[in-house]
Length: 359
Image 1 (cartoon, helix red, strand yellow):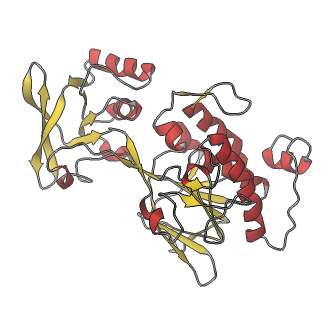
Image 2: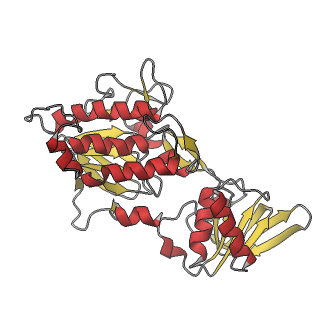
Image 3: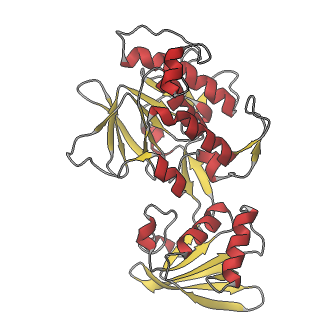
């Protein structure tokens, strides 16, 4: 994750220092493959974009749920993993300097007196633009909460479902729960700065990348962390602050693990979330669009990728790429109505090649 954040223009959460909203040409809600490729198509037309995503990194479902899973239907690419596709898209759009707002959810969408769209996130980040593009896949990813009695009392105090600021966990006695890539990645990453680190999983088998599994097990062998094959039964503490977690082992029975921080990484589920309250027409939790420019029922708001609906729709990444290209052409006319849109090919246009840094 560090390599992404070192290369991307990620701005701090919340209001800007001067209290004014961020201004851009296009606001993209969703930083999955389709949202990322939209940056490319918009960039070719000299349009700047800000992207909002509830995850702490780009790539959407590809990077979060199956980073190592092979994808076979990207044109011209026989096989590519979810993470590789994300990395290649980030490299492709680098010349266009997009701005990213990670670990945030678009909560409200309103119109300003100047006719711009104003998007406000759950961290009070405010962005204004003449065009909004919803590229949120099936909706916002939200963490799957473990069915532990009383867990709500501890959330955001000593139970966390994501890592927004790594340094916040320095010196903490951490128990990570889960067996996938996120659980393994954060166990390895935070072990270096934690006071103590332990991983708990209900079985002695992991869904994460083999290299991560091996690295975690090496840390256990070197007594740099603990591994528990058990199930969480109960949280112990006061006023939202954990002191220990009671777990149950198949043979050993119940015992307590001392910790002040629990991080359950049990995967994500998709919900339409606040987008459902944006005033758009919906069809079975999807957003109907036209097939000329993929505009929604609200002019100057577009929907591309798995979030949209139209006759014959196929939920494929390549379909979302096509939709993003047509959306960009329409967005140009909205943002710069006085400029003529001239269609050009990257293979022959020296102007486009200069923008891409290949000329």
